[in-house]
Image (cartoon, rainbow, N blue to C red):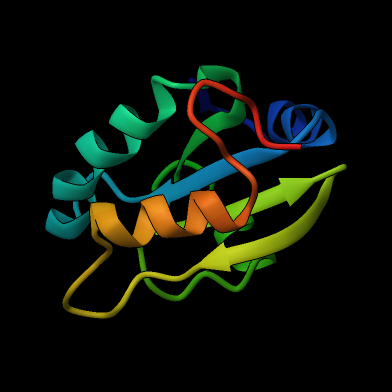
Length: 113
């Protein structure tokens, strides 16, 4: 899993096959409790998962209209294909993430297409 530190790297990563990008803040308790769930799912296909800290890259947060963190975006062929927006005051759950990943085509041990 790649921690994105700049927009150029982000653009290069999403240009590849299917990519799940977690937008999070290092100060958000909901993000911090969700990170282990995201990392656990990412272990099955680490190249398909990215982490974007909105504290460091607020321009990406604005570009994709992310209003609540954590939020997971799925990119296919460089374009936003699906999104799982966090819920204010609740965040996201492992179950929501698993269902979203399955909907986007992530099968056990395989990269999404």
